[in-house]
Amino acid sequence: MKRERKVPRKKLIITSGVAAVVVMVLVQLYTLNQIWQQKDELFRLKYHELAKEALETFDRESQTDGFESALESISNYSQHIIDSELHIDTGEADLDLLTNLVIRDIYDILLAEERLTLLLSGFFSERDLDDDIRRGLTINYFELVDKNIVYPVFISEDFPTGDTGHKGILVSRFRSEDNNFRLSFDYYIDIAGKQLTLMREIFISLSISVLSIVAVVIIFIVAYRNLMEERRLSELKTDFINNMTHELKTPLSTITVASKSLEMERVMSDRNRIVETARLIGKQSVSLNRLINLILEISIWERTEFEPDIRSVAIGPVLNDIVDSFRAGNYEQADIYSSIRLEGIVINADVTYLTTMVNNLLSNAIKYCKRRPRVDIEGYYDGSTVTISIKDNGIGISDEQLKMVFDKFYRVPHGDIHKTKGLGLGLYYVERIVRSHGGRITVESEPDQGSTFTVTLPTG
Ligand code: ADP
Image 1 (spheres, helix red, strand yellow):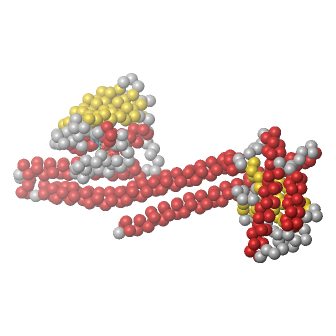
Image 2 (tube, rainbow, N blue to C red; image 1 turned 90 degrees about the horizontal axis):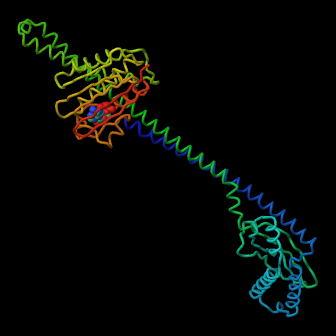
Image 3 (cartoon, rainbow, N blue to C red; image 1 turned 120 degrees about the horizontal axis):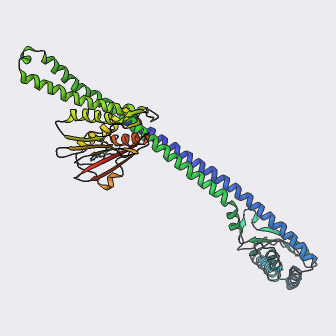
C-alpha cells in the first residue's frame, strides 16, 4: 500500500525533471537559432558592403566585369531570334519550350562571359578574406522588343535558394536595353566558408548552451539521487522503529516474568533455578543493551549536522570500560583479549561517539564469524597518535568488497545475510566518527582468516 502511493511521486519527479530539461533545450535551441540568424545577417551585410566597394574600385580602375561583352552577345542573339521569326507559327506548347530555351541561352551567355566572379575573388583574397566564392544569377525580366512574349524568371540552379529566391549575397542588379531586347538580372555570390565561419563565431555560445544543459542534467540527477536516498533512509527508519518496538518488548517481558518468578517461594528455595533465572535476565539485558546501542546509532543519524561534542578524554580508561562492558555481555560466545597501553594519554573526543565506534567494530568482529570468535583489541600511543586496532578471526572480506564496506547501507552479500541482522550503517558511522575526530581508519582482511580494523586518532 505504501509503495502504491510512492511510485507516482517518483514518476512525477522524473517527468517534471525531464520536462524542465526539454524546455531548457528548446529555449537554448531557439536562442542559438536567433544568434545564427543575426550572425548570418551580419556576414551577408559585410560581404555585400565589400562587394559594393569592389565594384566601385573596378569601375575606377576601368576593369571590365565581362557583362558589357555579354550584353553585346545577347543583343546579337536577340537580333537572330527576331530575324528568324521563329515565334510566328509556333503552337502554345512549343512556344513554352522555345521561351525556356531562349532564357537558358541568355543565362549561359551571361555566365560564360562574365569576369566579375574572378575579380571579386581576387579582391577578397587581397584583403585576406574568404575568396572561395560561388556565383549565382537570377534573370528577373527578359523581353524581345516588339515580340510580346513573356519569358519566365530564371534562377540559377546549383545555388542555395530560399523561399524568396536566392539566399546568396546580392552584389548588384543589372538592367540593360537596346533595340532588340530588355533585360534585368541580379548577380549574387555565396561564400563557401560561410557555414564554418558562422560556426566558429557561435562556438562560444554553443559551448555555453551545451555546458549549461549538461550542468542542469547533472544537478537534476544528483538532486534526484539524493532525494531517493533520503526516501530510502526514511523508509528504512520507519521499518527499523517498527521492528525495534517489537524487539524491545520480547526481552522486557522475559525479564518481567523472570523477576516475578524469583519472588515465588518454589523458586527461592531452589538454588539452581535462581542461577538459571539470573542468567536468563542477564542474557535478556544484553540483548536490550544491543538494541539500545542501535537506537543510539539512530539518534546520531538524526542529527542533521554530524558535530561531535569534543572534550578532553583519558582514552585509556574509556577504552578499557568499553571493552570490559562488551566482554561482560559477550563472554559466553566469544574470547575477547585486550592489550591497552594508553595510561595518561588524553585526546580530544566525543565519548558517546567513541563508544559507538568501538562497539560497532567489536560487534561486527563477533557477528561476522563462523567459528568461536576470538577478538584482539590493541591500544597504544606512538608519540603523536593513538592507535586502536581490533582484530578478529571471522569470515573476512574480499578485496573487491573492502572498498565498499564503509559506504552507507552497504552490506557484503553473503548467502546467509539475513541471519546476521544489520542495516549496513555500522561501518559508515564508524568512518564518519573517525573522520569527525580528524583520524583515519584502515582495514586489512583475508577471506576465511579474519579482519583487522585500525583506527588512528590525533592527540592534542
Ligand atoms: P551491518 O549492519 O551489515 O553490520 P556494517 O556497516 O557494520 O553493516 O558493515 C558492512 C558490511 O561489512 C557487513 O554487512 C559485513 O558484511 C562486512 N563486515 C563488517 N565488519 C566485518 C568483519 N569484522 N568481518 C567480516 N565482515 C565484516
